[in-house]
Length: 231
Image 1: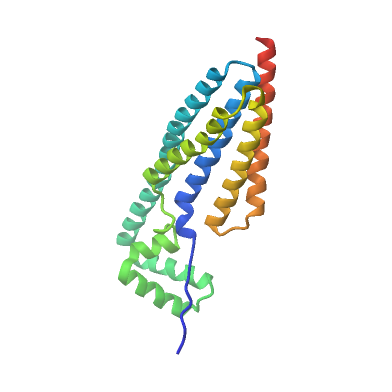
Image 2 (image 1 turned 90 degrees about the horizontal axis):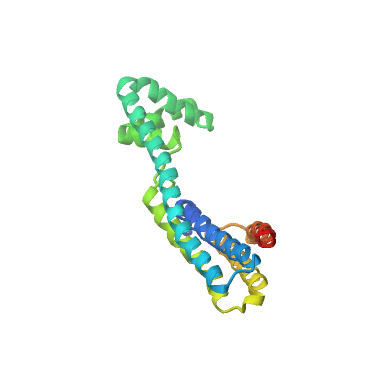
């Protein structure tokens, strides 16, 4: 008796996982950088808090709109390609069969068998076969604008809330180092969680996210300090 082993693929997560990691990462970095930059200019705590909350709300809306527009563009392209392919299947059925067979033959299938496979798949679902094997469009990775927009907006707000919470419990004189340090910890955890959810190695994504977050906050703090001295 042959024992079946469980298969567990993570490719279905790529759409929402990309949006989630991007949103949370941007929420932490942009809000923490904004707080550190404004705090470096030495204003009052209420002004720093106002800037942080405003940044969280504006960023969430911006992420939602940006993700929706960009992923919608991808979805529109996919729809147009599928419509074109559907018409070609009607007008040039034999050529499309040969094209699909050639794709399989190029992948190593014997030409006669490739032709048989192409004919059988097209008899069952011609458009699906060409979408998957010619255009590279599949259900697992197809564009979902609303999912991407909502995921990015929510995760941005969650990410942005972390440095804001650090701000609320930190004395003003320790604001810059505390918010910077805690935000780097949050970024490192986010990188590790994102890598874990995607089945990737943890160390490299963690270091990558932490490095760019530290660079962003350092530059923003420098600019904020400079502006605070000038004004």
